[in-house]
Length: 112
Image (cartoon, rainbow, N blue to C red; front, side, top):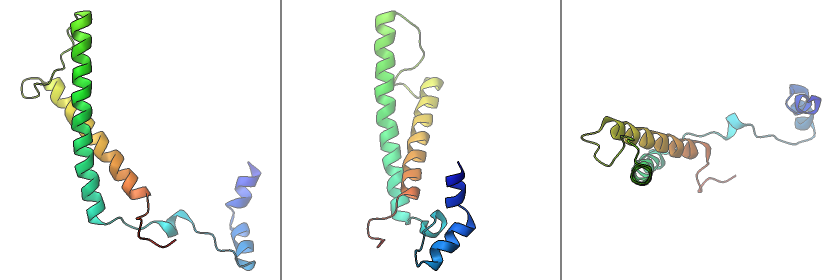
């Protein structure tokens, strides 16, 4: 525990600066991603969320047929509010995941 406090203390970084070692902190490395990468993340998240919805809905349909349950999720999103909510939730989660990945990953053309 004390080792982590020592490493992240200001005295340690000053000592490293005296020795000529430059530490790159997360705030120095962060750059805003380009709009093209964000648009690609949104498109990829929408496609992935839709495919996941189809897989989940078909899986629930198989369970409904085998177990004779009445789970109200099917592929008819216009007629079933549960399906529409599941589709929207999966798409939003996938878009958020891909945008988070774009935001936290540096672009490949950046010189480190």
